[in-house]
Length: 359
Image 1 (cartoon, helix red, strand yellow):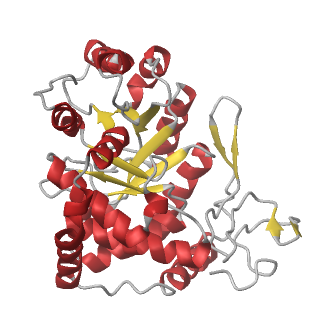
Image 2 (image 1 turned 45 degrees about the vertical axis):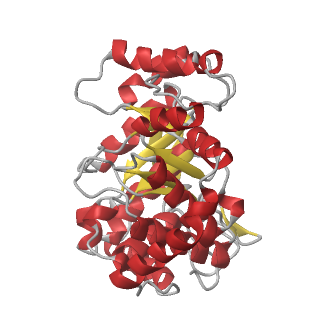
């Protein structure tokens, strides 16, 4: 937390002013002083990214200030949750409440929360267009059911999807920033994000650099994520924590808080590309982080559950954890998503008493 925004700023530029406590270098500060950008960025009308961060101005001092700022913020939150504590808390919620949520209305909501996703090495224009055409035709095939929330692809298909998608209220999502490992030069992450948005992406999913996070290199992660959020502007940035690689419940909570501090509109469990994807314990910990962050800042962050969500029972369990931990306010498709394409057919089959293989 920045103690006094008028006195503390990491702009490191001469001759800039603060009016009414607002920094003219395009920083965003919440009511609690949460800070979402440490640079001045300019973005062209076409989505291009021009950075004028003034990295040459006393880089060592900038790094120290940013390091202290991040650690001061993280210190405000209790991230000491144990693995067993998280496991039993999640299991207890599911055991006590899941049966009451095993209803047609909940399953319809869950179907409408699905992001239909194709992130395969075999993807091509024909396969992506076929997926989009299925989404376009869904209302005719199943008029009594809600369509999916989004179509998610690699960024090179953003233009194809945005131009061919006709279904109302279905968003175009792209993975950017070196998905699925986040091992990419920061400049390329920004360019990739800018180009995806220029081509029609409305939401961006990016991966937290887990190796950097585990080594404590918070400063460079903060710079990457805040720049990407700057580029996204009002469009959603979803930060994938890759919870299965974070090694502990405490790390998951710290990563969740950190991602939100850097501007994440959603936090997401997994890429689906490693052996351990979403788990009830991980989702519970992420929900507690979202709640803590909301309580301190008033910022309502969404949650996206992805990685191994295959059955109706799985989906209902995650819905239950979110409902009981965060409340019904989070049970909207603006704040709750599931990244699991196979789940769509499973839910359709359950809701229609058939054996659907539509998607």
